Length: 415
Image (cartoon, rainbow, N blue to C red; front, top):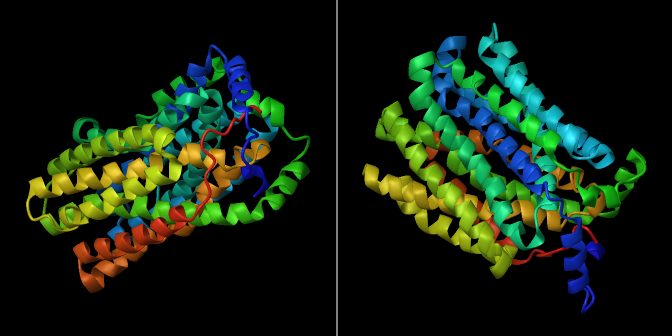
């Protein structure tokens, strides 16, 4: 892989000097807007996870019909990554990021007012386009704007934003829904969208994009074709790690309600707890990936996931389930916390929004049936064994993928 060749001896000092000179004093605005946008994106997605029963009653459909729309949302994400990623590599990171955030926030706000289930399905599909378009732009802006020595840390913070969004959705279930009604859970993100737009306007444009920008969309296609083998490997990587993430998160609240008969309040408290674990995992593993290397840090996180399964799936008390779910999400998001840095470091410089964005979202697309697969396995093996079988197979595949895969930690994006 020609773009994975190591730098010549003695070149690091030059790279560091160049990188230091190109860091804008306003880089914090860029990093903040990229991270906050991913928090909002995740919040808008997970609101639905907590309202499956409410939405099913509202639209007079079965619970499975609402769960199916999760797959639709995930399946539409590559479309957004392709369109908005191309725009970000051609015209810069800032304007496409603002357009993306405003788009998916408005679609989310319209969702609770859908007059029928069919319109609701269309809105969730349209939301998926905006959700998918965001990650590639946001991650490239954060990784290209942050100092190289902190890349692993900000990678963890960026990906922890997904868990923060999940956590805020759980908090909203306890605070906003009882007081204002479930529709307000879809509306409350609009104010944060406005803040993100302002921060992005204050951000500097990526100097890496300015140095590597391509002259036409035809050039974008040519670069993608030249790196097709790397593209296939990275899509496989993202498919497996997305199965790990969504397989442990999306149905877990329903698992707690169905198997253990916990109330919404108890489920919300557990969700808050294990999302704290997820945030800590992303920060800790992401930070130490700068020392251990990206692959080794991810393998360590996967080991934590495997060891937590007995308590996570088979815990018989609320304490055991709390410990298991905390450890599981620490490992899951610990592994995912390394992905923004790892994926951007393995991507061609001239398409660093489109390439990792499409890779990420195609992985989400191919992993989209994971929720349906788990829900189907539940009928044959029970909820506990369905979760266990699916996640053990996923973790085994990830050990192979990262154990034998490439790495380019510390790559200079500005050279």
